[in-house]
Length: 376
Image (cartoon, rainbow, N blue to C red; front, side):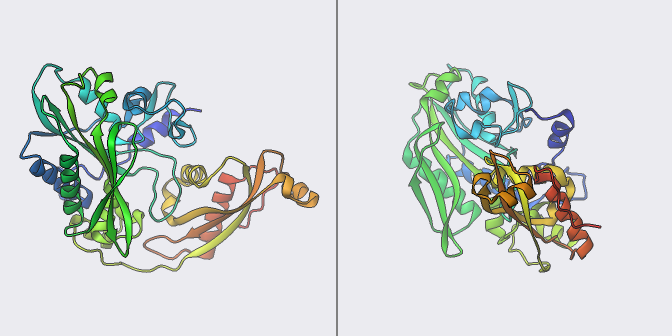
């Protein structure tokens, strides 16, 4: 039900690549840190040079700040333990950097005059699918402009969005599509035209009065703009990277290209190895929960997987009696066909290595009494 102490320690040890390297260190800033700098500078410039703060905090947050204070409903699907990492009934690993906003707002003097840009970057923790664009520990940044007594407007919101699009993808076409978010009103989804299609880059809106009120600020006096985006996606779009594993690669050929925001030059094209697994899993499992189970089981070797996806499922009731007996499947379970694509970034796996990884994925997922392992 809750994360074990070793799991919490491992989560807190995940390096935040948006943190600039120490001035005396030999390692240059990561492209994620450079992108954060560009986004911060653009937000300050479009706000007329308003004061700004970069606020970094622990990934451990109260469940109340992650959800309740931001206006998430009690039955919001994102609260489900299938998607969020809970440490206790009241503490969790943040699922978005917006979780740091309530503490910042509560610390403000309600009677003060203010026009300030708040930048909250960091690693967030989610149960997510395993594929080329998803990871369980992505980087995000929230950019909020908080003001009193001046009133911020939708025009200023769109100006902020446009400035951040320009910082991420100079000269890109973009659009603002109406969208709803728990902690904003007049919300928008910001899409950019890239590679011949519209891709979501950010979400934004005017700060919801309920958020201000719950944090001790009078919404008749206070207002502001709220915008959040994925830093990983921003860097991948800017550099033309199509595999999120690249961002944390330790391969020297790859790391040398992650010290700037210039276009990506593919290092190699390793051949994929595909393994299809027939496993028994719970009827409620999906790509996100399957991905999280595999990620936990493989630990550091998870980066050898390009993707893990459930491509077909058959309930126990739909199976012939002989198949049910062979699988040992029961009501409430399904027979799932899971496709595993193995492709490390820097080398080709041997058949023996591929089979060993296949078996580890199988053991992590299969809930039936009979195992079908192929490794030596």
